[in-house]
Amino acid sequence: MVNRDDIIRMAREAGAERNNDFPDWSFEDDALERFANLVAAHEREECAKIAFNAKTYIEAAAAIRARGTNEIRNP
Image (spheres, rainbow, N blue to C red):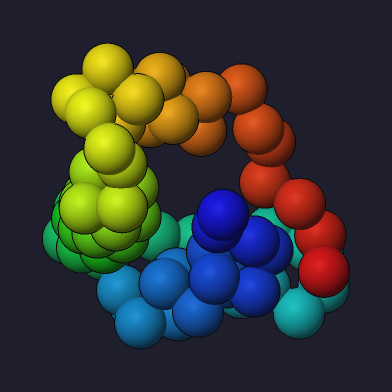
């Protein structure tokens, strides 16, 4: 499960900047694209772990779909 710290780490890694006066992040277009790619890669890896540990493709599909029902949780 991705958590708030993971999102912040990926945003920083992508080059996002945080405005110290507000709790906002700003992304240049290329940083936003890098962030989206990092999030997608993270999700692919998590889904691959689920698929690897599943007994059947039906079990894997159900577990991957269930990931979408969870919101990002604060630590």
